[in-house]
Length: 409
Image (cartoon, rainbow, N blue to C red; front, side, top):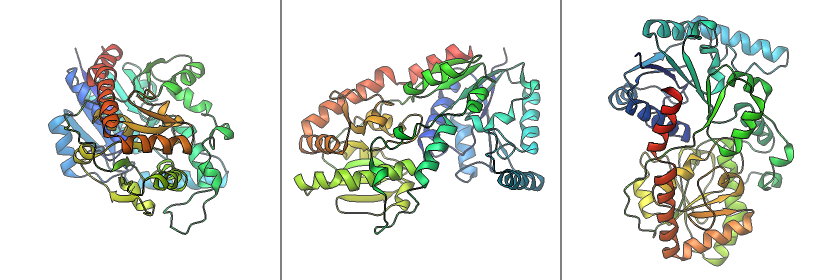
């Protein structure tokens, strides 16, 4: 039996610098465990981080059989420029899987690899790159897409937020108070485009990452089979101390920046009024987009957060925008660290309120939960132990392996 999988991911996921990168690596690991020969495919045209030789070698050593990276040609770049100008002139948004993401040269490269390997499974990540395998020539293979999130809804939310927020954010920036309203996005009634659902119907199986999105996709698609596979994470062997700062990892996207500003503007003052010693350590590339303030330590990108999680009392996720799942929550819980999250983030997570973490409806509740954990090491330990157990039982690699096996075998 041919167990070759062509696996396309648009970015360099190693070392992981985002939740999507971690999701990608976990999936690759589990495909390898299932005995598949995975050909990892990506492009320098689309990657958020530069492709390095070390990344390719690490992927081949630990995750995949081979790596193929597409280098765009001059004709590709001219074609992309033409399309951008064209859609700007006609004042229309390009189709979700337009040639801007997948120019002709890139599509030909993907098709040639498909025919040379006779791959029986095509595993796509994100609807934007559907153009790589939408032709009839791929009909003999089983096609699977991991949505990660609802792209068109995510973009619509970003556009709405950009009207009020630009980055990097300076200390004296005038920020509209509207972006600190917990129902900021809910009031806009934004929706995923029908075009994105049509893309999902091009696949035999569509993987949805968030429990709040599975019903949306089910109600809007007709052909594809829907599978809910949340973020998986193996629990870490950590000797938790619960004596250090609270932790908040952030990437550079606007939703994380909004969450950080919401915390320091609405939550942090309430916390510092009760305990001036409180400290939040913020990590990640998003630190470059924001400014520090009293009670906050901006540490920037940290390659390995294990030591910080070992010391951390708890984690916070004050994010209330975006789509998909907050992988930072799963990662913290896997390290035995409880999380305080907004209702929006909590509903998309393994948090069970008042058992392995807290879900807050507003800034006042958020501050109260932060203070409870900050002042009570035993509570941190109890909730942290419960958090790791939740991940171990319901969000482990074993579950991901089982779920992927049901789809692919």
